[in-house]
Length: 167
Image 1 (spheres, one colour):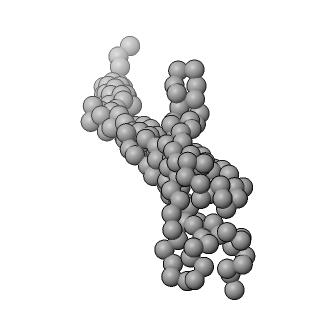
Image 2 (cartoon, rainbow, N blue to C red):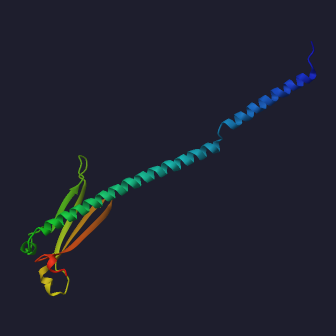
């Protein structure tokens, strides 16, 4: 039995088309080196951005905690000064001029050390009652992350209470 030459040609042509289609699909199925490098670069940028964002967030939280603690210390010291009477405030050495306190000490770290100064001076006003007032300034400093931070709180203390001097 002899084969039809036309059928043989179509069979060969079909086989070649199938092989060509398979090769084309194989070429399209994988990634080229440039596509892979680009993907790795994009993932690297994403991970660096994620790490940077998280580090910035943690740094911001730590700064907020330190500032909040500084505010608490300033308020605590000033509320203590508020409890003294006029003679105690004017007695040199009665109110300690320096103090230190720590925040968040752990087993492996001493925490952050806040150092403060209390300055009691003249109010710097020209009214007749300036001898009955004192300017109390509390200065708080601490070192965190290699940076020095300072917060200051100042207010007046009056001999007969501040309400007698407010109109």
